[in-house]
Image 1 (cartoon, protein in one colour):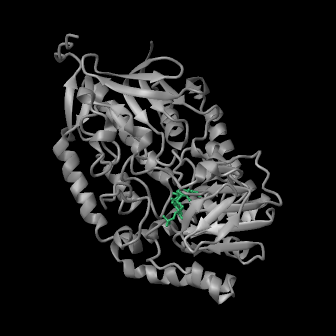
Image 2 (image 1 turned 90 degrees about the vertical axis):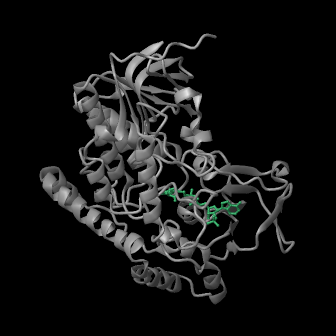
Image 3 (image 1 turned 120 degrees about the vertical axis):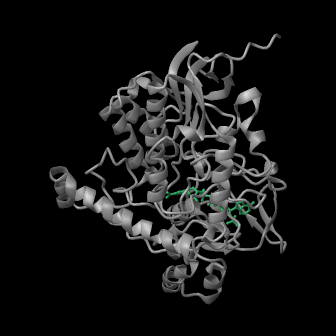
Length: 495
Ligand code: NAP
């Protein structure tokens, strides 16, 4: 049995950020459990062509680890993964990371007041469990009739088959979300035919991506304050969008006008333009950014298919109008299983309650996106209600990390064995957040991965990120049930 004070699941931005901050706080008794054989989380797993961040890198990085060497304002996937790898070395947390270690079970032991984890590398026991496994890590593939009979290649955007021969072949891409709009322009010039199956046309904003010059990088190396100022300016620019998304959605009209002009400038054919014109309020789904998505779709070898898919045959896809398109490969850019929270659902708290069952009916809930009633000493980084439609989630992660560190401080000062958020505190918080969400763009009537099938939005933080930071600045013990280290423990239940 591996015994540690803190077990962290996942070595992406959340898990690595937690590990680095723990080490900086002088806490060394922790382990990071990562199922992949590399660090980086989503920035390791997603390697589809064109994968790139749609938040500028000066902001989409740790505040405590600025990188003066970003090559572009919006970095490609390999560069972000490399950055995270470098952070591991720079802050000396490599020895704490167990790669290839898949956590298959996590259960709170009431008697021990410890978490017991089952992993592919054996059992672990920890006082504190920090989950940083992300919400977007279990691919969602629609179960289309006949799919199993298809004789060509099929794969999901986040499980890119780099061995699949796409050059000169007939390829279908299903989905038009953030992943699809990045990979479509990359593969369109390579394939013989590209059929893009679109269910909902997305809003696409122009992208202000450019290389960062040598002179700028020199400046950032020599004058770190210059990069901090740029980061601050980018943050303020993105944060200002929260006003339109969460306070007065009428302010989204100018954004919509910019996106519509982008479409009209890039697509001349009125028939294609009509297909690509979104019909919901901008921001209700994630706003996409691209300068080469629309141009790719105007090429002679590309087709946007809006007829619903009826079935897959051995050699292609048949749509509702009866047309069959012959294909060599189908790429699913169909997003992730979010509503079920598969990355957290397997966790069992008090009395063996499975989180997936607790959340089944109305979707996920967590106090400050971080603590869950019935699950003592557990903290979920980028948990329910912390996703953003307007700014960098790394900012949210850092806010949560500070909260967890403050909790550890309080636990040490008061010799606490366990802390568990009061159910009433969590319920009041959830009611407040749900009430706020009612007036936001995410409740304006589109279908999105932010919503649970019940219609509740368990995903998004519906306000300014600085207000989330303010609320997570201090761990308030009065929100929690506290168990002193010397308190009587429940007797073990006889078998
Ligand atoms: P997504 O946004 O959930 O998009 C999935 C797409 O697949 C949607 O167009 C959806 O259509 C379509 N779809 C799903 N099931 C379908 C079906 N049965 N038949 C036809 N179409 C179907 O997934 P994603 O593009 O992978 O992006 C997910 C999230 O990952 C993003 O919102 C973002 O947060 C993150 N991401 C970020 C970046 C970045 O640059 N930072 C890049 C990629 C992804 P509907 O719209 O009609 O549902």
